[in-house]
Amino acid sequence: MAESFSAFLAEFNLDFEENTPLRYDHSLRLALEYIQFVEIHPHNPMRLTGTRDMLDIACRSALKLGKIKLAIECVEKMETSEPGHLSLKGMIYTRSGRYSDAIQSYIKYLSIRKHDYNVWKQMSEAFLACSLNIRKDPIDTKDEFSLDLMPLENTLPSQLAFLCLICSYKLLCTSTWSTHIEFVQARFLQEKTKLILLKERFEKAGVKADYVMVWLKSREAMDQGKIIESGSTNFSWNMINWIVARSKEVEASIQTESNEEMSVRKL
Image (cartoon, rainbow, N blue to C red; front, side, top):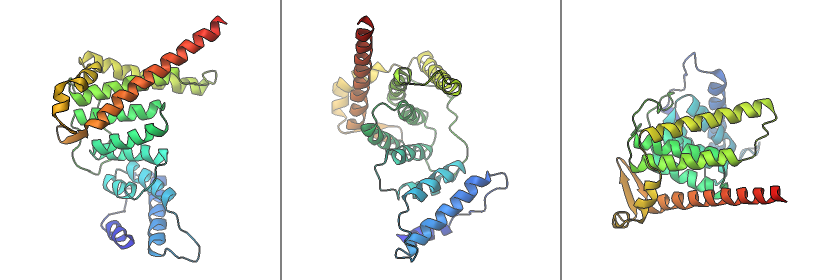
């Protein structure tokens, strides 16, 4: 593995552009040097062993620098179920067009941290990118997805994107924010405004999140077996079923908390 990774790195041109932020340039260089050293010298006298944290730094730096292929190579060396790394995998897989892998990473994350509105939002973005067929190959680019101006259609991926977005919005609005602190309130309002604008965009395009639940119960879904094709991406039936089931759990938990709060106020 060490030799193959070293050979892989040798293929990359790590002479970054002059206008590239130096902090990402330096952090990527140092992280890759550390990883390479540890893999070539596993029994080194300095007792440097673990590469997990350095892989995290390398992934994030490569992503910022637009080196998507390198980010993928690094993230796939992460053999961990740590939530932060699962979220990172989801982001990198989305940027590279591997939408099914991205969704699977987010599902693993949400199995650990069920009420993270931001990861529900990231999962929505992955489905949205899939529905718009943003990227099919891991192209190296610094550009973020340009989702704002592209037309939406009422397809299964866009419906799932809307469903995840609704969950994200509900969790954001019911989570605890210290809004008496000025910068926290500003962040909350900024996040809320972004989600509202996205919701309005789905609604104007006629995308129906509840169609997913209808589709899931239909014979059509059962007849398609375990794999559902969407353009160049395949999603497992279990994956979609998990998202629908968990969205219902989110709705139920929010309603329960709301009822409990009302009961306390009455007391």
